[in-house]
Amino acid sequence: MKNPKNLIIRMPNWIGDFVMATALISDIREAFPRAEITLMCQKPLEQLVLKDTRIHGVLSFEKNSLKIRRREARKNVVGVIAQGGYDVGLLLTHSFSSAWLFFQANIPIRIGYTGDMRSFLLTQSLSRDKAIHQVDYYRKLLPLMGGNLGKNLPSLQVTAEEKNQMQKELLKRGVTDKHYLILVNPSAAYGPAKCWPKEKFRRVIQTLLQDPLVAVFIIGDKAGFQDAETILQGMRTKAHNLCGKTTLRQLASLMQVANLLLTNDSGPMHMADALALDVVAVFGSTDPKKTGPYSQPEHVLYRKVDCSPCYKRVCPIDFRCMESISVDHVLQTIQAIKRHHVQKVPSKMHT
Image (tube, rainbow, N blue to C red; front, side, top):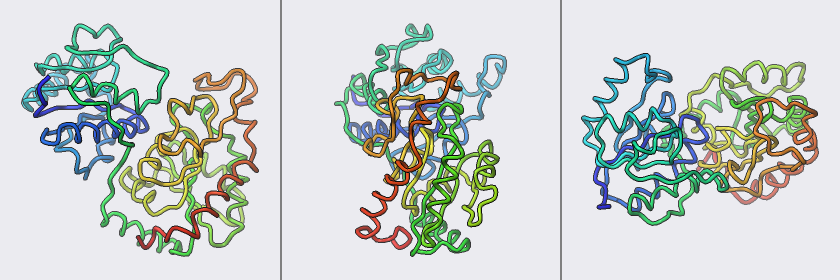
């Protein structure tokens, strides 16, 4: 294949998968420095790359607006794609419909993984390899474009202005450069089987807040707000509940000035990893070798039991994978990271 001049990438629909795919974007930018790169994604995921210097544009759409029953919406999107004059379309989604859109838009080279009866819509394809990390799964498509297999890490970009604004917002809440700022993400979109028990999160937060120079913010979407309130109920010293109160850009900015994230396997986990924020990730029903924080696998807490990874949304038995991870183990991991970094790294509030 000749070097692509104008390519469009259909990005994944989940936050975590989207972030993991950013490694491939960097790989493509290095392999084809003169190519124009456009991303196609669901709203609000475009916020993750709103000011990204690696790309030239984003084509975003509302979730479910491209379903077949909405033929007029699909027709309009096909027209928009066709007007882009793309010579390569790269599909990081697995659906038939996404490949069909690129086919209808007459993109001459259409690259993706096989499955969902869409092979005939692709000009170049690979069979799915489910035994590797998702980051490497995406980047394996690059050789089909004529590039070498890349080695970049997932990454997101936050501007200095956004970071400064977040620092001002934290000061309004009493968080200064003297605080060690810990973010806690107790929820996960896929289901409760991915979530460490709320009572254990509660005990960790209570212990952390015994140190007056530790600040804790619970993060997540609107669906996680009540879980956060349950965790915080009755605490004398409370963490801040930001669930549903931040945009993705604001969350990324918050991660840029925070010191650590305690989380389940989730989209925010991958965001933090891509922003070089220390992550303590608790895993149960999923496999950290495939979806763990790519840059810091040593910070994963995982007790493999005989039924894991099961990938179920709800545990049908005794939740032994998560119950076997103790509060003390999590606290010891956090304290070890805190001791290692707090003396050596200047506060992010000043950098």
